[in-house]
Image 1: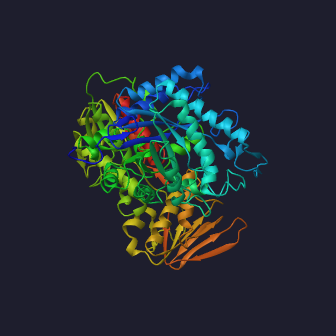
Image 2: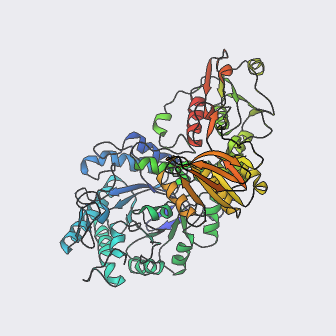
Image 3: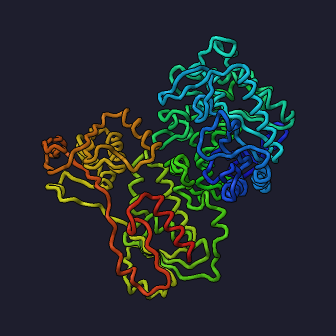
Length: 638
């Protein structure tokens, strides 16, 4: 029995396989795929890292079974015999570290980008016609699933996952929301289940009895959609045909519901566990897996210990740190890089530019970084600034064996992230800040707190490298009254919330201003956002913004766009619109969130040190991810 997580590290029997623990690396996809649809070296290394990190199973993500009628994403693996060698290398890379290799098979159906088929005929708003599937089409598609499963088995995968959730084809047939047929494939649940069961049967016939089949399914969390009782009823029909059930939720095919499938910071952790618990309580013969914002070993252990599921599937937690399982198993869970639930990973992949993690600059780039030059001897490194970028640089440099000294002019580390200690919405970002502080404390980093890093102090250490991360300060615009007693900067609004009145005007509708408004609403205050542009939070990725707007809808936050603030008084804010008309917004307190400006660091940059790097906000004001990226790679260059 594991002394740290006694339930999480119990082996689990799944069909003919034994999983080494209860942590599964859930399917997700990357952009790093060759033009012919075969995995490139970066993709193989990415999945291999997850296996090396200790997950019991590693599942390769969203892989279409039908190139002619079901392609849904711009860059995806193509399951053809010509790609077998590279697919085999991918499976071998996963299995070489003791993990079970699986792959998710999917079909877009009505939402496919290429000649879409679905349960019923209709014309999309784009003018594209969806064709109702005949029995001949169903048989053709079931055969496509079977051919794909047979090929991945030939490639060396240990099992396959059939995607029957989130609004894709198999879910479209099972869902009363999408399937309104009046033949034997519509109406009752047993009828709606005919096609998904046909697919399962066809796959089973192709792969044989000893090749485990997983099935992902979930409540659709939409009026008129699939309910959890329907999920249980379907699984009872399917349980003799499959070996593992994944219980998810919502619709990936609709932005309003995709923020539940991929929960944002505006939803709680472990958001879908209650669904898995109901399925588990139904007494199925097969193990049940839960997924959805399970971000730590502690959360995973509690789920297994309480009997709510037999295993947990993690996506973003293992993107942020693929070594979470091994760290937890060895009693080093506090060293796990936490997921910030920002969804940069998904947003970047969906625009087909790259795959990256805001918390872990290594993720998705393992292949390139594994061949990076290693230090030949320890160097003396000085880091100026104890904010997130400075701490990330110091940690990376220390992990590479260098001697690191850090200067921080205040009495505590954390920089601008200190505000996260006060905001319940920022629990994930706070965990990231706390991880940085934990690692600084654990590594041999010499700290000089409450100390200004002068040229003399830096040069007295005779450093080989200098990393400057002195951050930024609030940008203040020449608005009359901005220095009034009733005015605070956004970061001070968290620490001095009690000093603010009940009616707060927030000048600036970027992400900081918007999330400050949510914090004000949480404190029971009336909040009004005043933004000069026509839109708010333009810098937010689309998933985060959708989640934020849904959170706004549950409050009485007012949003006023197209207004430029001209004057602040004790009674409120004066502003003018684009036509020059004056408006008055009453408020007893005012918070401004007008951005940040870099702290000058030219004098430090000019010091005669072999290597000098400027990272974080003092170089370019940016999100935490940008600062972490620059800090990590600067330290990697030493």
